[in-house]
Each structure stands twice: as structure tokens, then as C-alpha cells.
Length: 288
Image 1: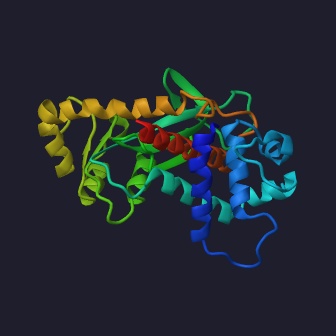
Image 2: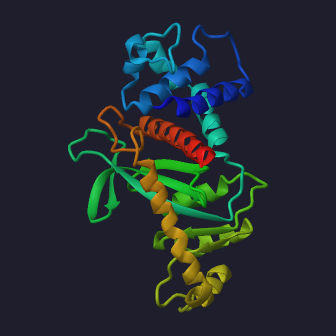
Image 3: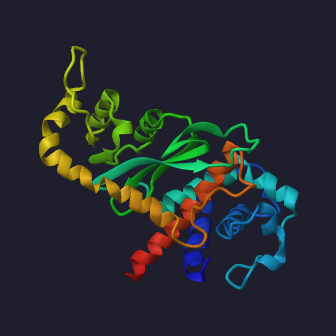
């Protein structure tokens, strides 16, 4: 990690830690230090034990005292540190800032076929099937990821999309949401419409036909698909560019390393990668 990116990450950690109420005694090693150590190891694509060695720090970040491996690993798994990491993500991603257009999509995170990870399930990917996980993301027009979720690869994108839309903070407007054909569902159209937005997905040729009740919002999209809706949908490829950007630099979202297995670890790892991605994104915008 370059020093400019860390200068955005570390202050965000300290600011978020001040807003989280504390219960009980103050620990020997602060929550700010534990979260910073974990992000430091993730950005260098190293396991957590690596962060407990003083030789692995630079002038950019050099703590005075470091915990041993066992206490550090236990602290990272606590609810307070997880809450702190979520707060840092929301701060850097500016999660409450609305976007005129949003995109929803999933990105597979496969593991080896011989992996013993019981949480890694078999699911469909481009070109066949694989075992692993999937990152489900709600991406804004300026490539922020305010909402995301990591599930096993066999979990339906429809199910996760429902929870993502439900998780949009009250008062944050949802205008136009673009998704691929996996999100074509009457309930999803109705759910987005209830939030004051409009969902647009590719539609089959027989859309709107049949005898069963269909979503009025989806039927409106069917009528508009040959006109403005089909033209607007072309912008959906912005989410693919966002996923590409997340992997196009050192420390980005690469294939899961061998020590990142089981669902809690994968979620924590991807969340840290998204924190670093937003810090880098904000830095690029400031420079430009």
C-alpha cells in the first residue's frame, strides 16, 4: 500500500472507533490498532500472523507495541472489530450518498476443487460449475460499493438482491437499478418500486404473456424495453468495469489465498479489500 492510500485508511479507522460505544474495560491494545493491523496484512496479501511481526512494518505505519498472534486473531473475530470495519467501509464508501443509477451483480470467488472448506458450495459460473463463494454488490454510477454481501456460490442472486434492497438506509433514494437476467423477477420489480425506484433487466421474448398475475412495474418495463429501457440498460456494463478495477492493482481483489477459507473469513477478507478499494478510489478522484 502506498502512503497516500494509508493516509486515508488510518484516519478513517480512528474516526470510526470514536463513534462506537465501549463496554467494559479498555483493552491493552486498542481497537484502532487491531483493525489497522488486519487491514495492513490484507493489503499485503498476507495472513494475520504476518501482521504480528515488527519487521513487516514501514515508516508509513509502525506501531510501538504489537500483540501476539493468538490474542490478535481472537480480537479480529470479535463483534466490536467487525462493527468497526463496517463503519470504516461506510465512511470511505460514503454509503448514504445517493446515486442516480445503481447496478447489482455478482462476482464468483472460486476455491480449488480439492479444498476441504465445508462452506464453499458448488454453483454455476461462466463456462460451467465451481466450488466457492460469491460477492454480491450494489454498485453506484461512480463505482462505489455501498452495499455488498458474500455468500456461498450456490445461493441465488435473487435472494441476496432482496436483502440488499432491504438494507438500503431509510431516506436514501433508489432511482434506477440495472441488473442482468438473473434479477428478472416480479417480486424484485415490485420491491424496487416500493422504494421509489425502477428496476431494469433483460426480458425474454414472451415477457408479459401468460395467464398468471404479473408485476405491473415489470409490465411497464416490458412495454418500454424496445425503446428507452433497452438503451438505458447498456450502461449496466459499468458494474463489470468496477469489478475489473478492483482487481487491476496490487492488493486488489485477487483469487482467494489458501488461508482465507470458511464463510466468516472470506467475508472479513473481502470487506477489508473493499475498504482499501474505496480509499484508493477516493484518492484517484481527489487527484483528478
